[in-house]
Image (cartoon, rainbow, N blue to C red):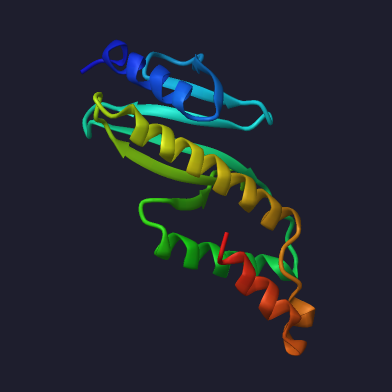
Length: 153
């Protein structure tokens, strides 16, 4: 399989999903970006040895502060509960949501559903990073309730 074999399936998945465009990445073949109307984007990278497509969405950065430990706890619980989705951060401390898709050229609808879910979750996590749960109110139950609510993204 080559990127040219994969691209028609990716284009069909983009059409089935909420993406408005699928564009090749500026790097060598095998990488694309799915662009959405709300300015969000997913990066798609072909992994030839594994016959998988890696997907990632940038979530953003979070300032150091009392909410950081709470958010890291939420991230760990999310990653444990939502296999194969994972959240990590790169060398620049930018959080990213990661997934993979076992390539099946005959079922672009499965990829479209994964793209939509990854986009939805990345937008929710952007909100969490922008307004982390309030640690100082955990003793009165409000902070704990807010943190628990984030688990049901």
